[in-house]
Length: 546
Picture (cartoon, rainbow, N blue to C red):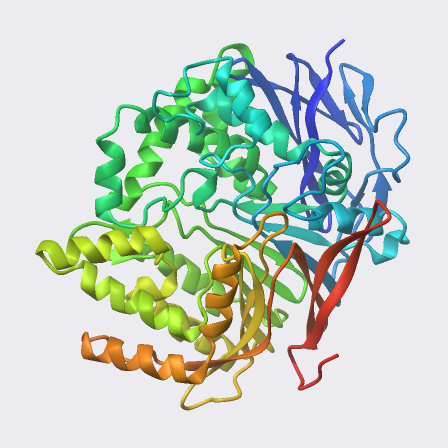
């Protein structure tokens, strides 16, 4: 009998359709809610994305997964509620989005405390399982670092050592497609997290650790990687596996119908093996950073009053010697068309970028300063490049042209009528809320909402640096230094409204028509029970906090 290796993962749901992703241990027919899809084959692994159409708007339906007619989900001994597919109402007024980033799978030995602390997704799932269905969120957004290809867990390192010599590069990092599949099973197999992802429509996007720290930070970094004898296999396997495990489910059914890569994989992988096809595609997609026009990993989702633009700020970068942008011109134009040209019923624009747009001000100035310094010839530029990679100076402020363009886009959005415009981010292993202040519109409802990590930690020295980087005195000093280096002042200012908070956290955005508020909650554990503690709840559409 064919078994379920991973999933189901409920990836997309709108008013009348949904998609459910699975990995199985052999070829089979996968059935969900009377819709049946055959698996496709990639490198010895078998996958299916079941596209369910004709659902009734505003309903919540329990579902099973059947493989060749036999029930494979839910597990027969599970105490958790049945997984459900909940569709949006035709004109939803209410919408709840949960988001966070950075979930390292490391688990400490039995009987020892988890040095990374309780997992925020697991804590959220445990609470959700006790709530009425009506209180469950409408969507989950995972903002990067679902897997850590360059910082593997002790268990994964033991497994890697059975395959190859870890004294030979890339050592304890993953090397190829097969090793990536192991990372995803490790990250998504926990009972609570698996149930959560089977029950809440889940959107995703990669960040650097899904491939490697500092991925595409600069042209120099790309040259360094290309010079190794292992990087080509790594990037081919990394992006091929990302397409299967993360990107495929990000697409709407209408996008799937038009996606040429998906069509080619289905043709090749139903009776053959689509691995070479996908790895060739991955290598081509990686060339975008060298200025080539390639595949769009960014995507859009609409949820009634909400438009969510999920932006690829890793593979979509252009980092040549003559050009340096966070997103290529064609893709940025696509973002602008969709963001500013949203329908009248869209009240809230969310730009999801794994990397924060508005950092603590002193760090923002440092990154813009470093971008100028690293472009200089000779040893000064080389030293700045080493600093860039050593301190991860690669956020929007380090791509100043793109930073300014995003600032202008968000302002145009609220001027065109949206009640709020916000950038949702992760990456930096702390959480905070900041508000933008433009010279002409100081009260514009534009926010930076950063929530990280779900399960990881920031060293104590970095915690101090993140806190100090908001201090006005340090801000004045870094701004003065940036000006002396020839950096122009940003087109806006910003102030912190809440945070920074340290610990494993998850954020919840609650939308009620034109009203929006956000809550940051921290995972806690007492007497072996997981819980969530509210750090702050704040309205984004009025000056109220609790």
